[in-house]
Length: 220
Image (cartoon, rainbow, N blue to C red; front, top):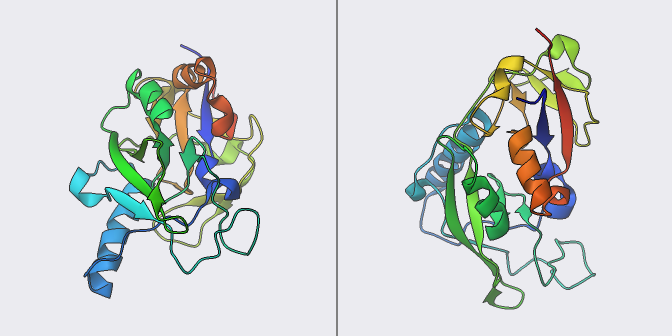
């Protein structure tokens, strides 16, 4: 067993934000809020969701300026990156394949179509909503650098994007399975992976998509 885990902040990277949202539906505002809050809380707490809780299609909005290299809205490339920021992470088929080779516990991968309204077509790449259904309260705040007390009563700490290697210290108990989880005490889109899963992304040539930073474990 290795002595480190990895923090992934790819979903907090502005370069992975393209403005995808639910298609228009007939839900009331209260129903939309309830739907979205369920997903947000699950993403923070590591709660498994069913396919019925998540979209099968996400769209950009037609009123955004989405021309290549111009305007103020998200600029849509011809090919999307392997990790896309949404309420839950969205990952490519290549990433999903690596995840399936490891122990993801109660986490789920649900297929999702990504539609770009500026051109009226869907991206040809295959993508999946990654519902991380595992949680480990493992980060040790007193021995870590870069954590701040959160204002929310439901979480304890926040972190900025761009955490450096070894800034976060974790309990050694978190080194076992499953290989992917969230820490519910941290308010962030970030999640954690084992060194085993990190190596899987390295071997697949995908590691640069994740904005990983190493977390060291507390020695017994």
